Image (cartoon, rainbow, N blue to C red; front, side, top):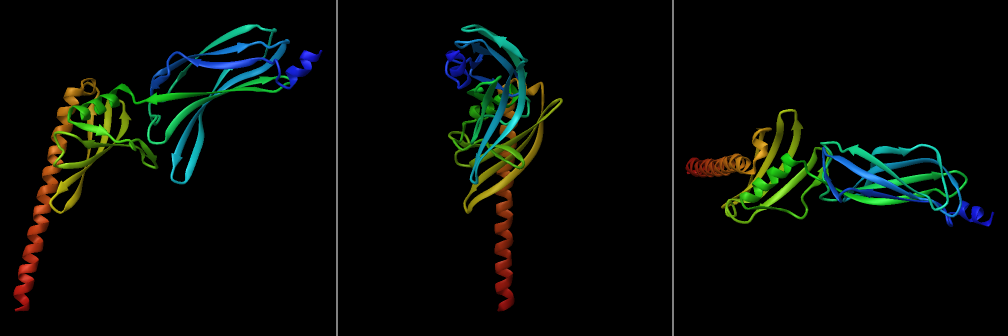
Length: 260
C-alpha cells in the first residue's frame, strides 16, 4: 500500500526513455526510434504515451517554440512492477523542414500519462541535417573555396538563408554569398545573392535558377554551375559600376561646361 502511495507521487513509478537509431537525420528521411518503458515498484495503468516533435527558433526578439508533429506511441495498458517494454516507432520528417542551424533546433518531448499518478516526461534533442541534394550544393560551394559562416541558417519570413564566405578562388571578388532553396518535383530552385567587392565598396547581384535532380547527385557538376553564375554576377556588378562611374563623370563634365 505504501509503495502505491509513493508511486502516485512519482516515487518508484514507471519511467520512459526515448531513443533514436542515430543522433541526426536529414529532412525528408524516416526517423526510427524506440520508447523504453521501465515499470516501477507497483503495477500502474498507462493511459497513453505520446511524443511531441518540437522546433525552437532563437531570434533577436527571443525564443519561439512550435509543435511540428505529435506521434502516438501506445494506447492504454497496464505495466507490471519492474517490467521492461520497448515500443518501436517511425516518423517521416518533412522534406522542407528547416535544418538545425542559425538558432534553429529540435527536440522530442515524450509524455507518459499514468492514471492516478504523476505523469512522466522525457526530453531528447535531435539534429536535422539538410537533404542530400542541398548537402551536395554545400559541398559544391566548398569545392569553390567557400566556407559556411557560423551565423548561417537564420530563419525569416522567406525561409532559411545560408551564408558563405570565400577562402580561395573568389576571395578578391566576393565578400559573401547568401543562398535559399525551394524543393520542387524535378529538382531544386535556388535564389542566390552575391556581395561583390568593387573599388568603391560592395555591390549586390541576384540570380534565381533551377538545378535538375540528375545534376544534384554530383557536387562537381553543381560546382561548375555555381561557378558560372558567380563569375557572371561578378562581371555584371563590375560592368554596372563602370557604367555608373562613366555617367557620373559625364554628368559632372557637362554640368561644369554649362556653368561656364
